[in-house]
Amino acid sequence: MNKSELWNRYQKHLCTCPEISLSLDISRMNFGDNFWSQMEPAMQRAFSAMAELEKGVIANPDENRMVGHYWLRNPGLAPSEELRREIESACIQVQTFTQKIHNGLITNQYNECFKNILIIGIGGSALGPQFVADALSSSTDRMNPFFLDNTDPDGMDRVFAELGSGLAKTLVIVISKSGSTKETRNGMLETQAAYTRSGLDFARHAVAVTGDNSELDKLAKSEGWLARFPMWDWVGGRTSVTSAVGLLPAALQGIDIEAMLLGAKICDEITRKTDTLRNPAALMALMWHHATGGKGEKDMVMLPYKDRLLLFSRYLQQLIMESVGKEFDLDGTQVNQGMTVYGNKGSTDQHAYVQQLREGVANFFMTFIEVLKDREGSSMEVEEGITSGDFLFGFFQGTRTALYENGRESMTITVDKVDARTIGVLVALFERTVGLYANLININAYHQPGVEAGKKAAGAVIALQKVVIELLGKEKREMTAAEIADKLEKPDDVESVFAILRHLAANPDKGIKCSGPESPADINFSKIP
Image (cartoon, rainbow, N blue to C red; front, side):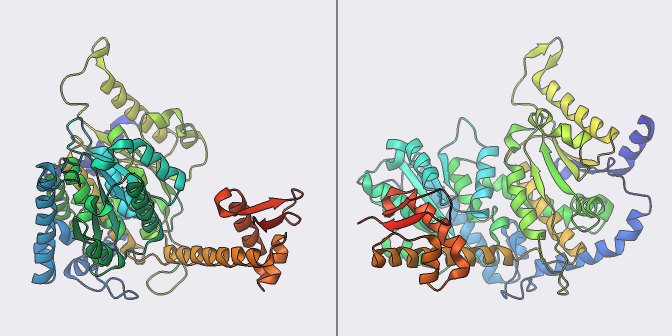
């Protein structure tokens, strides 16, 4: 296709949404002329299904719950007056609490103002807030955000070391819907211990975002934490960034959460419309279907040309892969659906994996994000008449062209600038796209049985570790992993027993030592007296 034909195709298929300062270019996706007529009936069914979802239909029959993240930015859509009031009350609570923190009306135990925020969460309870914090940070932030988003002790120590003496002026936000999520619970316990070691009263520095009457809710109430914020069962972790999960840390940091909510609300309004060719979420969902054959046959590479959007691909990994990666469809047929998402940022990736993307395995399609505004204020020239931002634009256009010339498909999202409103728009755009695409491929985007399976398997490992340690304490002799497994009447678990023992022996505080040859079968383990 020559440049003139490409220009005509660009004009024909460009979706422009001035209300949200966004456009979507799908002209470099190689769909045929009959694609729209073939997919339109399925697209209209997807629109209808999404409309029912927003009305409060039970979207998760196995959990008997609704899915209502759209109500978070437009409470008037909630299916009951009670829910509407709860959402509005939560927003007011976030803003009121934030004002009291910023104005020094709520302080630490020494009546000092808080300067830092430590957010403890996992998955969507961390990825969304991290993305927002990084994308919208500035030199004028009211508070500095830190995160514990794993159960890695060394990672926790690293964060505590960064905080140093600033721990006393750090407000802790513990985020867990159930209050029993192990990674978050462990982070909370380690943080409590860090405060105790520093002679600080943890409760005077902590707030909870959790479900009503959860384990965490009960703990925060009994210990007299500073505040408790709601986390409803109809908001999934990966779609929770416009709830208190994301709004509270953002507001405390100094981000304009009203602008973020407004951007999401207006984007919802646009992507709710059933005119497919003027709906950017519908177009993206259809492009996902086209590129992957509706079966996840290709990966999506996210490449935003803006440093502030570095974490967007990580955020989208969970939003998309946890939503569409399903073994069974809605009819119970085994389909093993999914779509792998990865990426970093431009133009960094042009010096990393774009070489393979252009000339290697054609197992992907690209989604570029272009930001028109380079920076606040004017830019210096790095060459005559050319700025650093001009080079970034040139690298984006060059990569897009080079990939297309080698038959690699791409689409481009263009936004005016990165601000709170734009972040709200992008969040809402991809949330809607996921929902529509899930309907196109007939899967439930809002449950995650695979995640629960992993949690149960992890619990079994911890339970096995406890009995292994107990046995070694009783036997008081050296034993191989196979001997221990046989003694426990778990011969099929010998590999797990060995892995547990190797981990225990590597950490002196566990009181387990190993000796003998390097062969796993012959290594002896014993309890240190």
